[in-house]
Length: 142
Image (cartoon, rainbow, N blue to C red; front, side):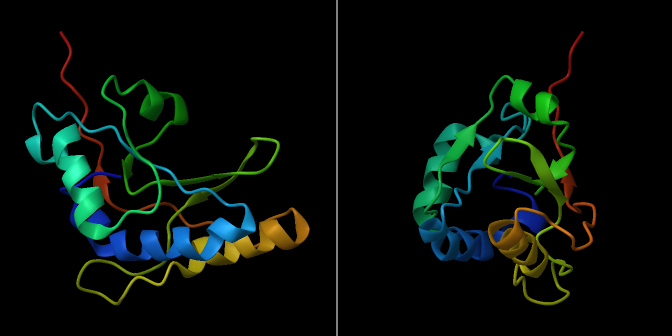
């Protein structure tokens, strides 16, 4: 995730709701910002702290300054959702829901369904749709 992307702005309240709703069910949400803060100052660590305070993030919001975490996960956009089970196996990768900025309210239905299935049976059977959002802002090299 990041601060400046309209897609993340669209779902940020839902991220807080998800964190609040699932914390007591042994689910931990973590936000990771891997964007190049030199090119996108709104995504700097200092601005991340302000964002977390302003919107009441109840989950850790981490800064991947080296961009190594995003590369290791194969993240491509913001937001890009990854769910790992208790064995730390990737079991879900996709979107929060089918809403978009200016097209419906975010309700997190896809991620909520996946989490509920995982918690109930240990398996996610529902469809997984690709994440949609802003591309990760990679640092230029060379």
